[in-house]
Each structure stands twice: as C-alpha cells, then as structure tokens.
Image (tube, rainbow, N blue to C red; front, side, top):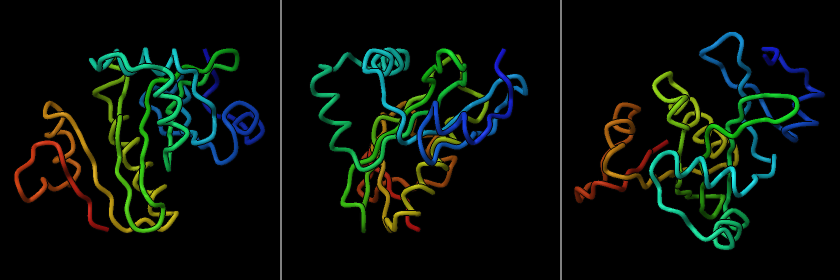
Length: 166
C-alpha cells in the first residue's frame, strides 16, 4: 500500500517538476497530477481503450502529444510502478484559446469525483498560462458530465462542442 503523503522530493523524482498531489477518495491511496512525467504510449492506449475509444496508431499519438499545449496525467502513486488512471490533453495557441481533448478516467476509478478534479486541474493550468477561452470536445455520452460542471452547450446545438468563458 502506498503512503498517502509524498514528499516534494518524491514528487519531483517520480512525477517531474510542478507535480502535485490530487485529493484522493481513499485515504490509503495517493494520487498525483503531472504535466511532465512522460507517458508510456502502451499504458496510455490501454487507458483510452478502457473508456471505449478505438485504437489509434502510436506514431500519431506520439506526434499529437508532442504538439499538445498541455498534457496531464493522473497517476495512482506506487513508488515502483505508478499507474496512469486519468489523462487529458489540450491544444491551442497558449495565449488566447485552448481546446481540451481526450479526457479519460479509468472506469475502475470513475464515480468518485476524479473526472471533476482532473477538469478543474486542467482549467486552472490553462488559466495559469493566461488562456482566456477554453473549448472542449466530448462524445455525446458524456455531455451530462460536462454540463453538470458548468460547461455550456455550443450555441448551434452541436452535441460535442462546449466552451467555458472565464
């Protein structure tokens, strides 16, 4: 069982600079947000498939990650083998606008608020770099999740496009 509180040294060594602990629904489980820990593409693919997405060519996923403005992993801490349980990425100009793509929480960890915490973290990270308009593309099956967080359906009624006005 992993310890609940990681030291700054552990966060830096395992998850990279600016990593921070995420509130955990289980007092015996430590969770960490990281924008700098490299992703194992196989582990990322397994996470995305666990939420029902079709397989993507790893060479293209690698390029998409390299060209993303922000990439966030939500990791279940284990000193020997941290496990990727959540993910989101954003594209954009890094100044005025950004679009959130590929938000996923492993189904085993869904229903306890981690998706909301991930979205709050992503939104705040984008605000921290000065982005003033955030859009989101989501599958129709998760529209209610985003509406419950205050996202607004795109005016033309497109079921997949949302915006969040700061």
